[in-house]
Image (tube, rainbow, N blue to C red; front, side):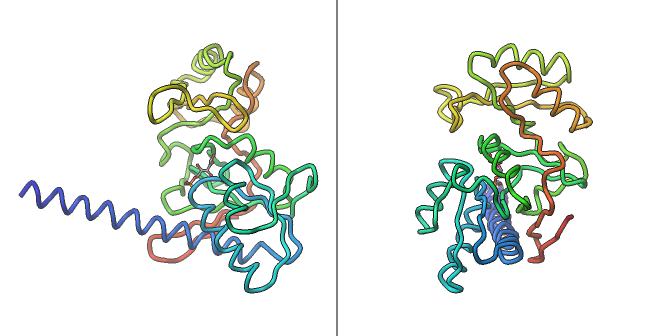
Length: 249
Ligand code: 5RP
């Protein structure tokens, strides 16, 4: 009986992860189809959902002979762009983007986001901030009324390495909860971002005024950026379990 129930829970987990992948793809394809046009400069986010968006960009470039240029938000995004044979650029050459497309760890009812689960929050925020439109793509598990409902890993905060202890103490003293240094999966050392910094994951205890909290945390010496994206996203596409796409503006 035990073996049977183990197998059925394993099967359930497999089915859920297939559904989530399909949902990511639906959201990514909808965003690329609705927001990318010929001659666009496109910001390419990071994570697993963006992989589907880059697939779709490459398909459309091949099929429709689109001329687009991509500005990546991480080493991963840069590799994706290159692997797909897309035109790679940067903010020196293209400081103004037509659209930036990126995933999120959680999206609330007012389009405030937690990002940085993959540690790329700073470059993601810079690129999104340079875009005329910032579009979010996610599966149904990221859709929340308020932050913290779904995403339990907290708000990522990128910090200069020498400052991680004082910054962590200050966040805990001012806002409660716990700000923990993100360790590599091997536990051999901390995760180091593409910018050479460390990450704190601040596990907050209750909802906050996120615009205020973001501003206050950014004022702490040593903080580079927070994973709170407030007032930046114009629209979110959620791929749903039933194969539809939910849009939030
Ligand atoms: C990386 C990010 C990602 O966009 C976020 O973690 C979502 O990733 P995924 O698409 O794999 O769920 O912010 O820093």
